Length: 87
Image (cartoon, rainbow, N blue to C red; front, top):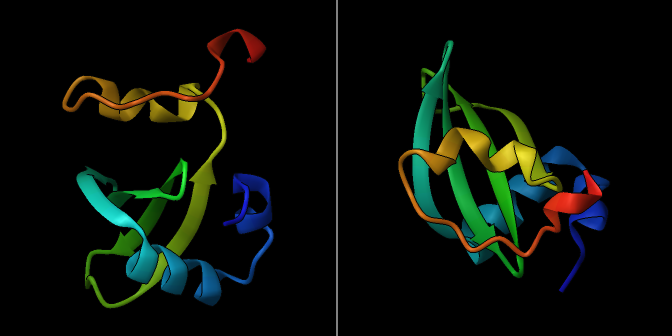
């Protein structure tokens, strides 16, 4: 198991592979020309940003702040282990 910070320091192709094989898909949202999938991985959340062709990934990142989960707050309930007071 790795921390969100260690995950964010991995090469993008490895981040995507780990998220897709070991993560649990939770939800998606659309922003601009991307479909963003939210995954639960180990004990943190990860976003995979897919371009609209859905064949290429533009960004993978572990969410390390409470604020980063705001776009999901209206549509799903999330377990938050992030301390909101530290932001």
